[in-house]
Length: 442
Image (cartoon, rainbow, N blue to C red; front, side, top):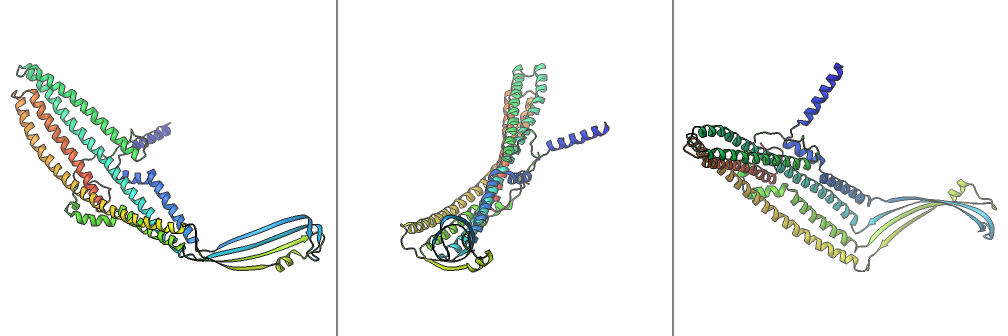
């Protein structure tokens, strides 16, 4: 019985520990990268590109095929000695090997192999780019939870202040120092704050569900992140010029690498298309033998016939394209058009990257200024609230004006929280363009 109790205690402790797990940003990002369906699909695309390379490499290798035929002929046959037509039952067994290899194909095989290497690189870039995008989405969802939690803390703190003032207001009303309407005003404020707390709690729940869905976690109720007081992290990236960040982004960002890679693939597609107008040369070799048996005639033994009936064949096949319904020329023209298109796409990707970096740089600078301004406003609101509280406590300020002072303080506190997490995310986006991984907030 004691053993059962101990086992139940251990199991309960383990289950409780699993439910109490608090996720860090790094754990959320790593889990998303390991389980995201889109990433898994891109990994399959990479595997498919690697198979395409094996196909391209196989084009350089000779083909080798074996064949065998066993047949019976009942009725009119030709005498292998007199060549007369006679009725008999004959059996024939033949077999052989054949091999062929491309000697020259207008360098198409070589260009296809080089293109396949670029396709593998393109698939890897696509996979890495998707991982970066997922990481950004996870970081945004993670910071949204932190923002909602701090917002709830602000509301709870304000509600505690109001509850303390409720008793103080009752005492002043009972003493006849202030009218009863002030008490009703405080109670209305408490009711409004309770509603705000409920809304804030719902916002936390919805943001947790959003992140859990992004991670493909179904246990929404027990999913939570580490509740830590995060500060604005120091970052040297704001000391860099936009031009330096753009130069770094062009070296590290995968969307630029993808555009460059696609342009190179288009060049090889053009070379492959041009190869179709060149002559191709193919070499072939075949070996065969057969065995013949008849009920009417004495036939040599199997081994002798197989040895005596051996044959070898060598051939070279030269193909010169002359006219193929404009298909070859049209394919070349299409490839040229695609080369130009990918050049424009590369140029557009460069322009988009510059625009995004300038936007991220200005956003990070702007949100930092907004955060600093919100802190200054909060300091001023706190002084004003303390002054209002002193006047309210001695009956020199009515409940409505005091409530307005608290509302302004609450708005200032909320604005500090909002601008702080807005700046943290915008800073992470800028660091992302500078090649700094998104794993930690502080």
